[in-house]
Amino acid sequence: MLKTLTIWNFALLEHVQVRFDRGLNILTGETGAGKSILIGAIGTILGKRITAEAIRTGCDWLRVEAVFSLEDLSSELLDFLQEQAIDTTDATLVIRRQLSASGRGNILINGCHVTLSILRQVGSYLLDIHGQNDSLALLKPENQMKLLMQFDDTAQDILATYQGAYSAWRDFCKDYARRKKEAHDTEARQDMLLWQEKEISDGKLKIGEDVKLEKEIERLSHAERISHYVEESYRLLNNTTREECGIVPALSTIKRNLTELLRYDDALENAQKIVEEAYISLQEASDEIRTYGEGLRFDPAALDMLQRRMDTIYRLRKKYGATIEEVLSHQRKIKKELSDMQNLDADLSELKKQIASSYQHLKESASSLTVQRKKTAHVLEQGIEERLSSLGMPDAHFHIDISPAENYTKDGHDLVEMRFSANAGQAEKPLHKIASGGELSRIALAIKTVASTKDDAVPSMVFDEIDTGIGGKTAQMVAECIAIVSRYKQVLCITHLPQIASMADNHLYIAKTTKDGSTSTTVRVLKEEDRIREIARMASGDSMTEVSLENAKEMLLHAHQKKEEIEADS
Image (cartoon, rainbow, N blue to C red):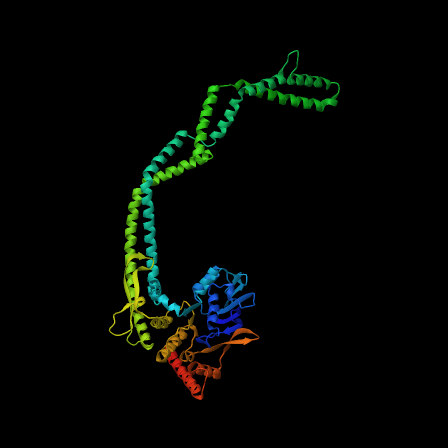
């Protein structure tokens, strides 16, 4: 429920705070006073676009703030707010929207910044604005279907079951189409994959093989230089010619000399140990070098074979992966795909069975949905015809035609068309072919009245001057219909008719004033005496008389009695 609406610098509204009650909130005032501006401000809270042109002349910004009670809001909205990390522990929901003259704006819900898209989703749960132009929405088939489904919880449950069946059937069909296309492309791809798999298999790759080969190729490619290093190193270690003495023989002589020296003086005992250890180590190094040199062979044929093997590995790595591991992984994927191709015919056959089974379930669910929709349509059209009769159309006939659709859709296998005849003896025709603007408004109001007892998705409703072009007894009936809706929802209604204004539970008067060359709009709650004068003004104009005032009192008394009757019936 909307509790308060506070507006700053919005068109003629300089600073206005409006408090709304449960039941029927009536807004009246002179033409041009700013009633539509107030509805426009409410629209901004629901996510409608606004521009800097809406900012009051001479101001740099506008702001609209609405406070809603969380008590009447749907669980779906509360879940959505929690998903958006918006705090709902308090009993209120505060929406604040601000726009600067530069066009920059921000939106906050309970202090959290949100996008315009999120605001629209939240707004769809809070308020339903119904104006003169909104009656035209009834002409759209999708809206007629939506209205019918909102009226019956059972139909909605069956629709949910149907949509599950529809989704499963569609998934099977999509999967079959995809697999069928794969089958069409399979032959050429299968030949390519078989060739790739054979090429990799013929390579007989082993993990780590390329690293070993690269080292061996490096060694054989530099065999002559390696041989030179080995020979020179061994010669320097072991040479015993007269011209030069190798390191190992020299160390042997030094070790022997120091050993003899120790017999006379142990001062060089540590030096002797170091030389002995060095001798042993270099002797071992010399043996390893000799053994390595003896095994060193330069074999051009072996080098060529290794290089050809490495070329094969390079070629496979270039095609199928940066490493042997990646090439072998690609080979496994090829084998998996080839295996899947071999099972393709069996998969298609199984998918056909699944499609047939899911289609049968789809048909049964759609049939149940159709039956329930026809039951709902019968109840709804009876209630609407009764309301149309009370709205000055006693001979009107309203029928909801449900016929088979050409294809199954997410909404079922039905086409919903609302048909209408205003006069006795006339054939019913689709709304868009026969209903006038005034008739559409009354049909929409009749539907809202009947549906309000069932539709609890939105706790508040706004009627924006839907009484245009009606009067007399019809006006009284329209007032009673709006009063009925207000027993189930909070209603905000802008009206020019005293019959409707008389039904108010909370009467707000909107006035336009000019001071110091500046025009602004004010909103105030009317007390009993002020209500009498306002209703008298609405009924007879500015020239009020005792008779018009008495007539206004009579209208208020009659409205009070009628509301008691409505309360008793509800």
